[in-house]
Image 1 (tube, one colour):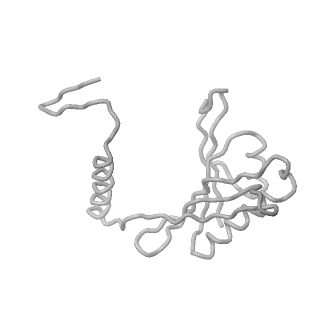
Image 2 (cartoon, rainbow, N blue to C red):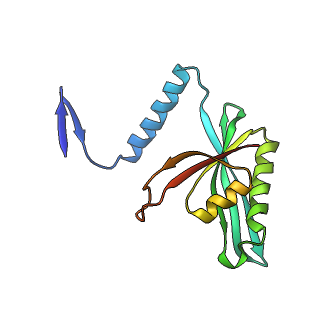
Length: 150
């Protein structure tokens, strides 16, 4: 698709690496213009091993505005291999990442999840729903946003 507007062409295509870099720089410039410090993130991760075999993990992003962490941690991943589920390992992985976030001054944690079993797991750990996007997945199920005050 191609659209022209007052001599400006709007083209449907992938961004180049240079265009992505310019876009990111532009967002940083806008943040600074509005008095907001540039945001960066650090990944926190815990890996569960049985011997040398990976059996699970928790991982997410702690965001920094300038030199300080913001008040929110984004839990991007919590995974436990099927045979190790329902034995407390997921809770321990979650607890470890929450404690690390608290140590750096984060006050809240949030995540996306789906499915009844995962939702019940997080609710048992005091997470509350803040968003639901109905029919997100091809089977018609929802994507649920959860958060917790640490």
